[in-house]
Length: 73
Image 1 (spheres, rainbow, N blue to C red):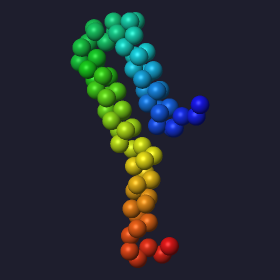
Image 2 (tube, helix red, strand yellow):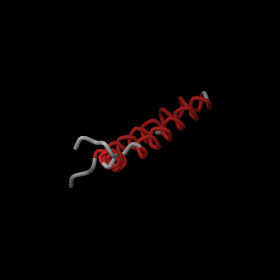
Image 3 (cartoon, one colour):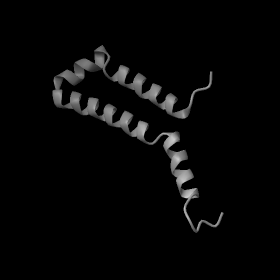
Image 4 (cartoon, rainbow, N blue to C red):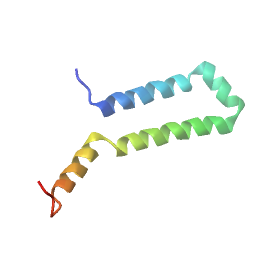
């Protein structure tokens, strides 16, 4: 089954988050709570960025630029 690049990246972020918050590393993060929230916020920001810059958005931007007047095409 072929997945889109965005789906593959989101799956990779999920696995990275799972490993980062697994038991051995979670003990490290709990030693400094601000670092725990920094990593958690970073994962959320990465997922949000990934969802905003997906291929559907790129296609819609390309179609909008093709509809501009004065375009040589």
